[in-house]
View 1 (tube, one colour):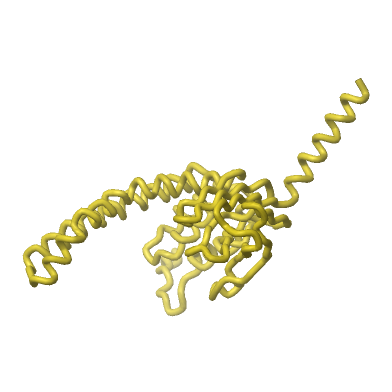
View 2 (cartoon, rainbow, N blue to C red):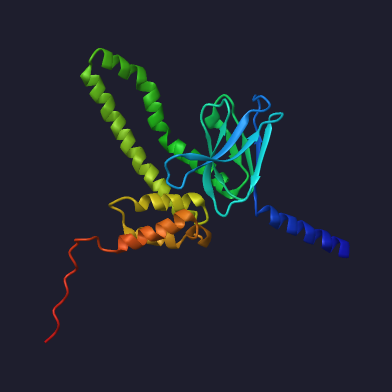
Length: 251
């Protein structure tokens, strides 16, 4: 009985320890041995990407380990590949299956935020599909109209495109807001709310309510702290703003 308890205790300790670091297990079929995989993040000024770690592909595999204090978007750049693989770096086991032919179709899974990121992207892609379909179906028609200076056709296509674009924009905005309201533990939610706070026409009370519903870990993250500062700014009257009228004192 004691051996069983000790075994369970050791297992629990190993499990808890594994959450204190990240392990990125990558499969990169078709890439030669020795090809470089670079883990990158945005620099502190947001002006570009900087390398965080570098490993080599061996027998179609690569692995990156480390620790992070909070979820942060990173990218993987593989030598010889066209494009980067975006994902959320967080402690836990992250699996990335690289699609050599179409890097954008690489698969990411393994941790809560990455699973949510993939699902959210899939849902947004479905919402935006009608616009992509319209572009594909009418690309040749538009090119022909431009060559022949057929303004009637050009204007008609642009009008229809704008209509679809407006509808999709509204649907996407609704999706973003609904997601943030229903996923208080998702890193994507704090990024959505942060983006909303930059809208000049934003309802600050709505943003504050959404912020208050977030998990404490997200409030304490870098974007969470920036959002808190932004909310304080939204509550502060801008310089030169007219103060609210004060009722005269009763005599």
